[in-house]
Image (tube, rainbow, N blue to C red; front, side, top):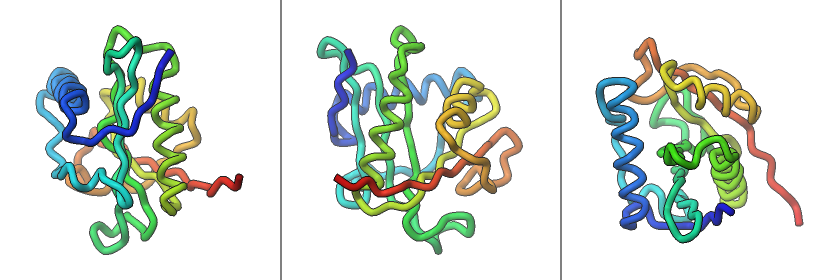
Length: 163
C-alpha cells in the first residue's frame, strides 16, 4: 500500500526519485528538464513536495510550487505548478500517480491555490492520458518550453474542500 508523506524537496529520497525522473527525461527526450527549480520553492506555505513509500521504499514523488501572474503571461495569481511527478517503473500501473496527483491538488487547494498548471511532453503518452483523465484541460504553453513543439501544458481549477 502506498503511503504518501510530505518530504522536503532536498531530502535524500526526493533527490533519488528526482534523479530517476531526470534519467527518464534523458531517455525519452535526449535531455533533462532544465526548468529552473529551487528546493525552497517547494516548502510551505508556497509549495509542497511529497514522496510515496511502499514497504518503506520511496517509489513515487511530486510537488507543487506557487506561480502567480507576472512571472509568465500564461500564469495567474493563485496557480500551483506541478513538478517532478514520477513513479518508479516497477510500481507503475497501480494508481500511484493518481494518488500523488490527488494529494498535490488537495494540498494546493488547502494552501489557497486556485488552479494547478503543469507541463509535459508528447513523448509521455502515459502522462497525457493521466492528466486528461483527471480533468486537466490544455492551456497555452508557459515557461522555458513555451516554444517547444513537443511541449504540452495543462490546467485544472481547484475547489476548496469544506470539512
